[in-house]
Image 1 (cartoon, protein in one colour):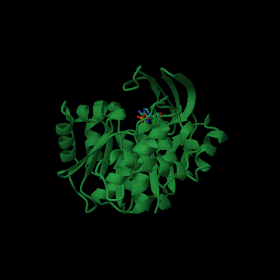
Image 2 (cartoon, rainbow, N blue to C red):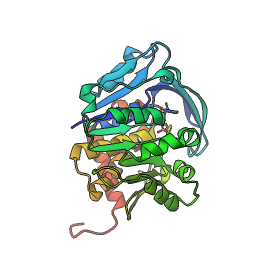
Image 3 (tube, protein in one colour):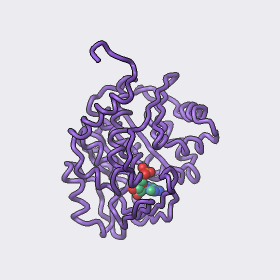
Image 4 (cartoon, rainbow, N blue to C red):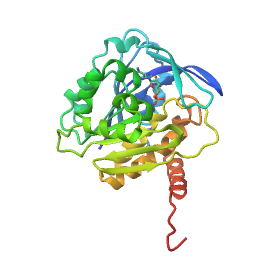
Length: 312
Ligand code: AMP
């Protein structure tokens, strides 16, 4: 089993109240693959420019990530810049330079087209649809998006929603997409947009609430989980993609799509995202180990369980 991850590979310039970085490696597919690869072999399909260095490349290959689908095009790598508020709960995009993404047409190799698990990271919905057309017989398709595409490409985005199994978005995006202030009502509306057309699993929606955890819905089933409590948070960039990497990585590794396993996947996603925000950019994820993930998962399990068992 393996995961095919499509999204952006980028350079990010980030300012938070705790510091800043200039042109650090980032992008939705980068954060996703760095976390998912702790669970299962992960391949990346994306485009970078001539300014993408061997040092950048090694960040992927050291985690055994397959970058044969990472195209190198003439021009500059996607460049994004964001600035966070004092409490890190909101961020302003300072600029988005699409660069090589402007002309990117994802070409999925014969090997990648057979990937059972596919994650469509945050990129233009038209690119997400182009990728989906090339996938042969997926077992599970996950997807992320952002406010920009909800604003500008809603029609295409709804087409994407109708072809996927799991949508992972944040609370402000859910409210914006459903045009509804109540999060639960908004979530139910979005779930109803994800009409079931396949014989895979009934659609699942995960809505992340930053430091306040998440909710997950599937049909009439509902789950809620807090975030992992941290005193040191330096940079939330990539937390969403790192959540998705842990969540999807765990599902792909266990090949179990039951409601109970989806709940466990939420816990693994929460834990992998918690590592991401402790340092700027991808720094914390580059050397993250499975042992560290397992240790924090156990701590998280203890602090979210409240019913006494016989032995404790
Ligand atoms: P997150 O904090 O999980 O929303 O992800 C942040 C990452 O998304 C950054 O590393 C950016 O490079 C990337 N990003 C920002 N805007 C876009 C966009 N329009 N398309 C694709 N990736 C983006």
